[in-house]
Length: 67
Image (cartoon, rainbow, N blue to C red; front, side, top):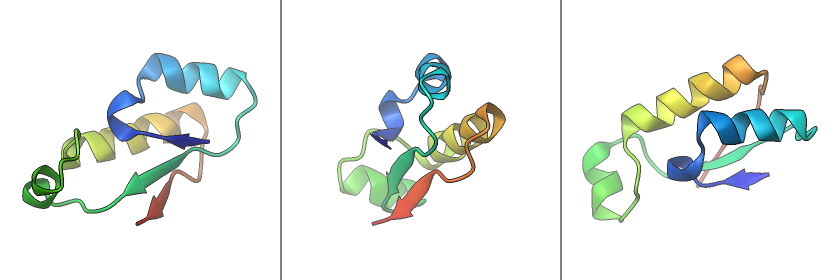
């Protein structure tokens, strides 16, 4: 399932896991906050790592594609 980083909350992760979703794809363009802001992304580097940690905790092991 493709997901927007800024929209992926802990509650949504829990629902995905309970719904038998086995892969969440996050489109990571860069980890650089200045570049993220310049290209209009609604998240920052810290949120990327936090989301990955939450996905790992929920049992997901594949979580992003490089764009």
